[in-house]
Length: 365
Ligand SMILES: *Cc1c(COP(=O)(O)O)cnc(C)c1O
Image (cartoon, rainbow, N blue to C red; front, side):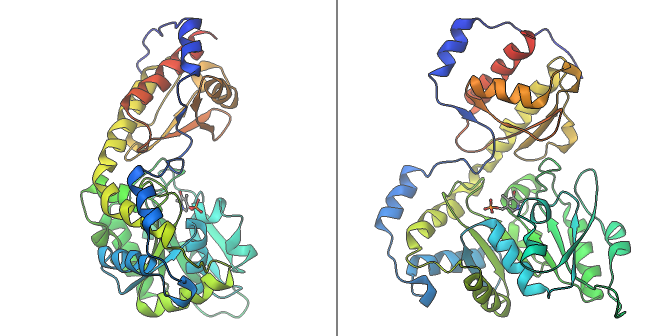
């Protein structure tokens, strides 16, 4: 850490800030549809997607399958449903599913892996969130012993949200898939932010995901669509996924009004994600210079920044609340940890405003 003196800001400038729109760094899900998306939504050609008759949904699904080099794709209302549909397809009740301990589909999806898929999570904590075959292998239960639940699935998360948006090196995820397939266990990718990983590594998503049995990615995160995620895989897998989606109540009708925005997100947004990564880096480096604040810079690889406020002697919840009062929104993720995400609705000026508000809060302590 490299402490620099904080600049005090006046009450007047804090007042002025209140009239500005919020700098919303809580998540990259908070983005609003662009005017182009809203026009496309208004004009979308639609049909009944439960009959597979919606031309716009069909175009979105075909395009997603093409971009990922797969046979088929299916549009789902949320990333959580996409992950659950995949888990239902790959497992049976009484199986085990392996996750990194802070995996989204294990921790933040209402325990649907257990509550709905009837499986038991088996987890291991890895500091940077990146599992390796060495970590997974001891967790596996693949031999049929009648009193032991069998491993039916491994779930990887790229980028890893709660580890700070960290990215799987391709050889690591490839190696896990190869070994898992050798012992007959499929691997699902929670790729909510796989396009962020693609930009960080400079490799197409098709290449990063080719060895996975199924891939979920979100249109509604950094890609900026208002709603929706995709599940991609083989024709057989997607046919099965269609049935599970319906089982969960996720069969939508004239969903083309939503898919129209999703298509624009899919075609146009990946090309601008590097800006979010540059803003996250800028934010992380400046945060790390504030007295009492520290950032693990090597984990800031994409659009997520975690910072620790232990050195300020203040509580993260209290700091986040004070930021909120001054129109800078973020979330405390622990007693001294705060998370901020960059996205298309926050520009560099917004990041600078967030920094200056935080500086003034910390110097007023
Ligand atoms: C957001 C997120 C999801 C789920 O997406 P929802 O659309 O909010 O249900 C899944 N995995 C990861 C890693 C996420 O960040």
